Length: 271
Ligand code: NAP
Image (cartoon, rainbow, N blue to C red):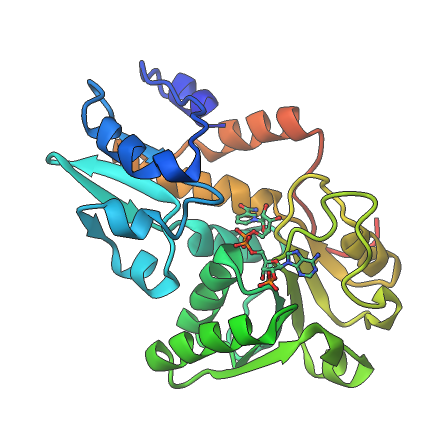
């Protein structure tokens, strides 16, 4: 996706994968400073939280999320950003045609992806974010952190066992921010037969393009949104931070579709 964007704008740049073990991460950050013509990097699991420590500056956004997914080298300083939340919000608007202001949102998970999405939703003043997580304590500590920055939004922290028809009926949007559904053998997070057709159901997972959650939601008449749009738009924002140029989104979308073999959304429900 990034290399397709560089090619589309005629930039002699390259984006390469670099596998780094957790214990080597601080040394890897230092090594980045010494690469000639280095512009920036993405950081992914399991380094997103650790990156907060080793950088020279961190954006307000990344600080309030508590995780970094993009690094920019600016005037010799390594600066951390987080483009995941913005990526999700752009996908929600552009691909699902949804304006989440004033809506009640259920978010499953309390890791880096969930925190970025929860922050972005709180910034546009959704009415409520209910965090469901396997370990309720982790959801509670995320909620405690968010309450300080967003006093106008109602936050709830619940264990996964609280999923039921009553709580689902209160929600307008349901988002999976766990890896459950990446493998065909994953047991479902809850009984997907409980999903009501009025829900917009989103999954941050982009491979497979349709998880069992999204497949069940689509069959029940819900609008659905997979993680491909978030992946695209978080990458487009990172591209803009590194290059200062407008991202050639159609080229990036095409490169992703070729790589994944799937479309980004079915905003209007069952095809
Ligand atoms: P993470 O920080 O490791 O958090 C994972 C979360 O999932 C935790 O809350 C964990 O609960 C929960 N979880 C893990 N296994 C579970 C299971 N078997 N049952 C129930 N809950 C489980 O991961 P992340 O970075 O937030 O990523 C989560 C997913 O979002 C991944 O699939 C990732 O690929 C996707 N993602 C996509 C994008 C995109 O651009 N589309 C961006 C970011 C993330 P505990 O707290 O109880 O362990």
